[in-house]
Length: 479
View 1: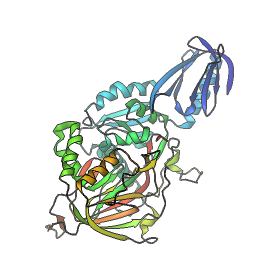
View 2 (view 1 turned 60 degrees about the vertical axis):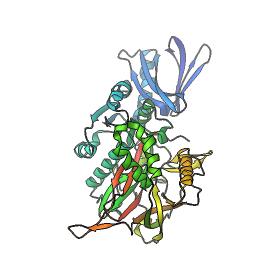
View 3 (view 1 turned 90 degrees about the horizontal axis):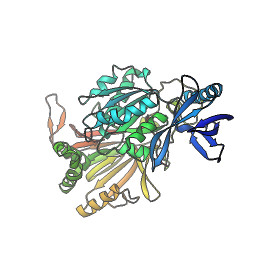
View 4 (view 1 turned 45 degrees about the horizontal axis):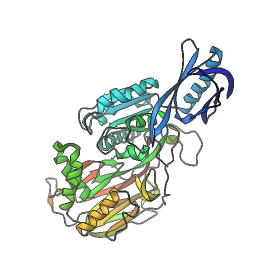
């Protein structure tokens, strides 16, 4: 749509052009142009007397950072009405989220979650006309209890405001609730899980906020708000960890057994140190590292993983449309989150043994690009990383390269990586005791780090399963 009508911006006469790709206005005096991508438009409201309309959009002002920017167009009422209705119709068709449920963890990070919500998040939501139901949690496990009673059909997205651990807790609650409503056994490791019908977003208020940084290239809170309101989403995977017939949790960031489990357990013991514990305690844990004898059975990945996948898609559309299918499908569908390989009919379990420091998995895969390791969402399989016995100096060197995101950080003789769809870890030489019911229980403290939470193992066997595209995340990963 082009218009030569007399519109004014800050006293300057302009002409307006709006397409499905952009909004552009040009000053008639000096031909100076301002172009805004249509995807960045957040709201369009008309004045009561129809003498003008306001557009709020996300503008980039620093590397990867965004800020909400306001422009007001004034003009004849009939022209104002025509142009504003076209832009409003575009926004309605693109299904920007207008109703959100925001769960806030007041204990995350520097404990500024609620204060930052009131001072930084809420003003942006109000300016963009987005309604938010904000709930401050008071205890662990509350997201599960709250979501079970909440009408999720009344919102366009769930948002977790906290750290990576709180996001993981909210994602687990959403996955569990979806399976319950769909009649799927959440604890069955071979079950084909149903993907949640609403995306999940993250507002950073934690110590690390790694998932947010992977999504947006920054942990800027305002940027995270605007990315959610823009409505673009990307698929993310999870790895579920099972013990006997119980699903302990779904991991979306890191699932680390051995060294990283010990690190997180030790960090929890020193919470009084605040965020400083993450700089001191892991080093102490590394110096006191311990090996574990393991027998690992794994299913080699059937599918190959492209280096960078998980493309951004329009809000909600990618949830119900699998790749290559353009038919409109029901909002709730059984998504193939468990690969065909898990039927155990198309591939065979393989086995490896050894004395190791760690067995780790990262659902968000780090792949080499431009000389650094970059996050890749929605890959086709898991990468299982096994760290065998090695000298302390070599181990510190390798972990330092991982921290610095060096592309060759896993190129060490004591590090083994395998692309898998599932694996089982047995602890054959770990002391066990017989329980009152006749079962076997570990007589030693061993932990799994699940997205920042230390889970104590109780049996000498645990299993990890891959769930592809289990949920949609608000955000657009940097390219």
